[in-house]
Length: 151
Image (cartoon, rainbow, N blue to C red; front, side):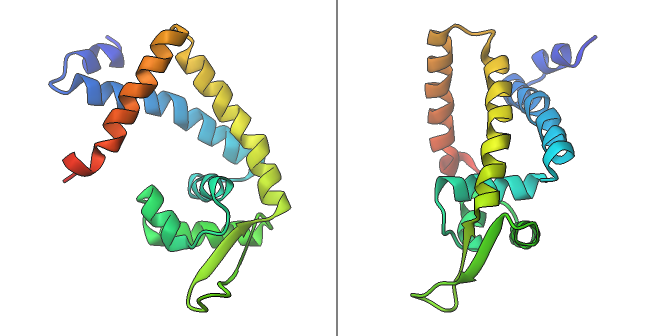
């Protein structure tokens, strides 16, 4: 018996399949990222957010990612120590800390992201391009409905 057989026979087969896929996609890539680049998961979360929108406050990152404040704060401090981000007080509001990618942080992001893209490409290779597009639409619909079903 394989894990997938158990997953298929639970009362929550879709949620289990999503978790199954996530684990087999994400975990090996995160371990590789840590081994090759010295970046751990919370740091990667910060890098992704800043690559999307530079100049965020750590609290913004917590709200975007639903990650605990202490994880994000430690990740920002660690990335700053590694020279991947710079943080300073916001010129418009001195109480607010603004975090920005450094050149090293951007370069690191640019080296790591293709590894995750390649992993996603392999994961989706079982689907036709049309099926991939449909899956993306369906997952987006579920994601946008999260506020309506979270407890």
